Length: 84
Image 1 (cartoon, rainbow, N blue to C red):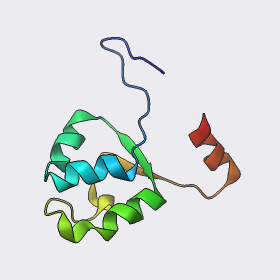
Image 2 (cartoon, one colour):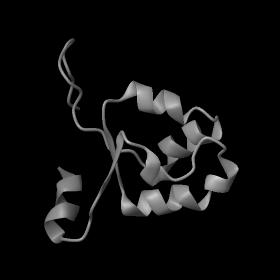
Image 3 (cartoon, rainbow, N blue to C red):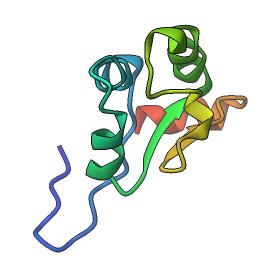
């Protein structure tokens, strides 16, 4: 586990669908965004969350979240980077 010291930036964070679903379902996706400087996820997670956006009033599309980066997984190198 990587620990950040006080005043240091947090290590890169990657969210799965469950994290985004829970905040969106509680209609508090804004709290998740305010809690991180940046957050990353994958195209697969983005599609999964977008399937349920009609149930989440505060979420039009996951691609609209400025603080969320959707990472590619098109090459072997990109897939391996998730393991590190």
